[in-house]
Image (cartoon, rainbow, N blue to C red; front, side):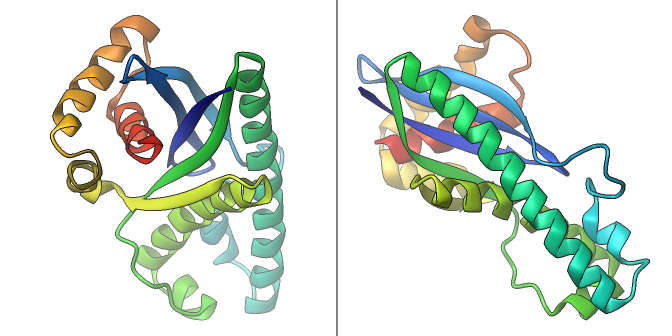
Length: 196
């Protein structure tokens, strides 16, 4: 089986997943998927910390725990499905990189719920952690990389090949079609970086 890696860029309740493999020493995009990690039928789960702000602290903790469980389950279902499809095509995913934000440490829940900027930070981390937990459950190695440091990290890990890889990934959109936004390109570069 050919080795592959995934890059993931999350949003509120959904994310983009791009899988890459090697073809003649160059990055080849083998999958591009939108993954959903919330159940739309359940109120407030796309912004769970915003929703939890209306609750008592105990109720908020319980609610967020249930949301986290649901999001991890949905993330695992999505990643298992993508992995099964890739396996049928002869690829084995061994690693995943999750693009992150600033990565600052979050305080206790009561302080998060009291400060709107922290609510946004916590929600970003909440959905990224769902992907990381799903990968760990599936024995897929996970690396977190700050998105704003991606190019620097790519240069560190790929050396002179980073510029060429970035250009090839940008051009991949011509082959695979739309959407091929910056978040897709970043996820693909991150995946390529950890594949090599």
